[in-house]
Structure formats: structure tokens, C-alpha cells
Length: 247
Image (cartoon, rainbow, N blue to C red):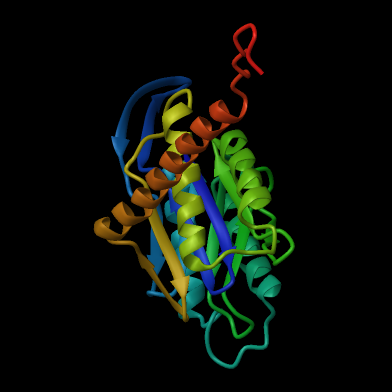
């Protein structure tokens, strides 16, 4: 079970995840254990997968090999979509070697390009790539997708009416969406929240102190909304009737 959020920002990419792995024996869940779901390749590429851990390991290896083959580097004139199509083709071929169904794994990948930071979703249903743009700049994946998609849509309506956020705004929205999903999901998704950013051709994980600052902003926003609730109470309070004979 997994919660992943990805946001293409004006100045980079933010990807966040929960940190829980569910063990199972067939259809029976056995235990949950903490796990790191975000991978950084060569300090430049962010990978976060939803599905079987073994398939995630294989996709990370595919990207590592593609990096060594200079798919992402050098004087290549490949467009971002062409790069993503190569990754999808290589991974689908890898899946077929052991008859692994494509529907068992999906991923978000962020990488630098001469046209700017890129965010791609490799769909769980068929592993086909979708590029995020300034028209649709956010996505989520995993068992909490119905929760996080709706939350991100609210973020767009309230905070993103003019387009994609900055990196700091993306961290705030991703942190709030993931914290909300962790609180209300029916099981299998837990903290701590982990987050990575791609900015200026460099990818890194946020340090625990940085993550604390993101969540502190979320808690302050919740506190502000609770204050607005009090304003609503005052605005809707019934008028007090005047005593008889008073005007």
C-alpha cells in the first residue's frame, strides 16, 4: 500500500511518499514495516514507485543503466517524452522476461532536461508515460489516490488558481495531502512522510528538519482555518431580540 504525490512546480519538481511497506502471504496481509520509497539516481533523478518492491528495484536498475548509457546526458536532442518512452519500453521488456504483469507497478519519475525539470507518471494500468505540464502539473498514485487526487484538486482551486506553485508551495501541498491521507486511509499507509525535490539539475531528499518545517506550515494552515470557523459562528449568530418597549 502506498501514497505518492508529485507536483511540477515553476522552479522544479516535488515528490512525496509515505514510508510503509505491507507484507503479505497471498491475499492475506501480515505485517507493515518502514521503508524508503523515494530513490535518487546519480543525484539527478527522482523515482517513486507504487506496487511490488521487487518491480520497483528493477525499474530503479533500468533507470540507472539508462543513465550510464547517457539517455539523460550529453548532447542528446531527445525530447522529454522520447526519453520517457525509452524508459517505458525498456521496463516493459524487463517485465516480460519474467511474465510480470504491467498492472502490478507504476511510478513517478522526475529528471532534469534542457527544457527544464520534468515530471512523468508511468501509469499503473499499462506503464505508459504521461508528461506533466503547466496545464496539469500534479498527480498522485497508490492506494490512497482517491484521497490525494481530491485533495490536490482542492489545492488547485484554493492556492493554484494562477498555475503551478513554487517549490515551497509544492512542498506545502504535498505534505498536507500526504498527512491527510495517512490520517484517514483504511490501512497500509503510514508515516513518516518523505519528500524529494529536483531543482537546478540536482535532486535530493529533504532532511528531517526541513520536513518538520513543511509540516509545521501545514499545522499553521489548519490552525488558521479553525480560526475562520469562529468567524463563521459570529457571522451566522442569530440577532438578539430587543426587550419590550425598547427600540
